Length: 319
Image (tube, rainbow, N blue to C red):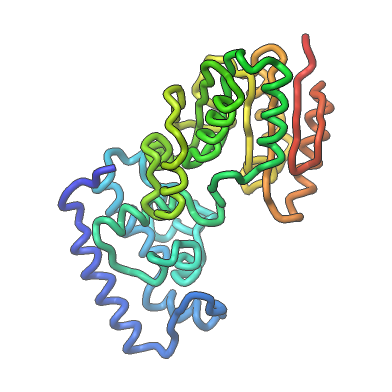
């Protein structure tokens, strides 16, 4: 990803370094990794370094720097400073809480080199709490391996990874199929963030260099593709033998019956005959009620459901 030259980064840095200097002269509060963010600390930062304004300035910078406005990470997609927190409920309420979301090399910064700004945009699209990493769902991987063996290792297999993020799981699954002897494993990953499509396609994780090393160590697969789209309305007309939907159901955006119905309807249309929907997650226990509801909705809609709420294996009834 090449940022456009002269996007205004120097002006941004000068402005926010000046404001931080005023904050340091005027306030007794400081921030450090691991500090408890008290109301007083939050208020002091909001007085001098309001997070809405910081995000808004970053959005203007990103609009000039990125190849297209659609590449702007979701957390920055606000049109006005005063609507930032209302229109992006996932935006943090203060700068310290924003820093707490970022990798260590970016936390505490209000100015950036071009490389650090690239890292920041990637971190916004793929924050640490998303937990994107290899070998995240070993039980599901074992089940997929058994499924390939049962259907015959030489058979071509196509897999769709909904909400693929930066593509580790997609590539790992394609490699698993190849290891099992599948002739032509084909994998397609869909994510809502164009920057994640870029990271997944090029196997780049600028904000997480240690994870990039692990990702690039995977043998390249020739038939792995990534596209930008909504998991509830994927821009595809093909069918797949396996649909993966990991880390979505029970999360922030998929907790209610209507969304579950939409997802199941989409997956039914995307699955080839005898296809399987595999769903895993590592959410905290508070998400279990949503996962149990999803399993119930699936059964009500004539899906067979096996496994635990955290690791489901579903197939639609043959009609």
